Image 1: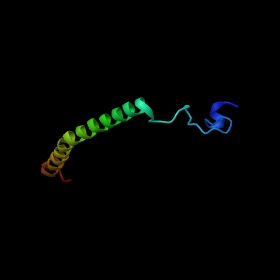
Image 2 (image 1 turned 120 degrees about the vertical axis):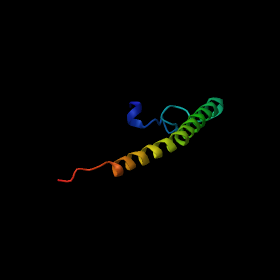
Image 3 (image 1 turned 135 degrees about the horizontal axis):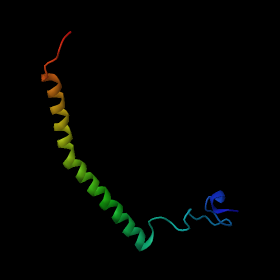
Image 4 (image 1 turned 90 degrees about the horizontal axis):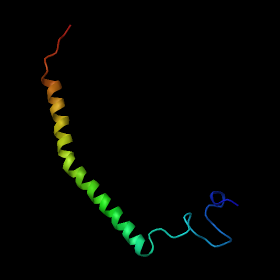
Length: 72
C-alpha cells in the first residue's frame, strides 16, 4: 500500500507521516529554536512597522478631509 494511502502507518506501529516524531531529540530542539527566532523577528518587525502604518492611514484620512471638493 502506498504511503499516502495508509497515512504513514506501518503494520500496526503508529508513526508520523515523515517516519519520526516531530520536534524530538536534538534536531527537534534546534527546529523549535529556529521557529521561535523567526516568530520573534516577525513580531519585532510588526511592532516597528505598526506606528508607520497607523500614521500613514491618519495622513490619508486628513488629506481626504482637507482636500477641497468640487460640488456640482
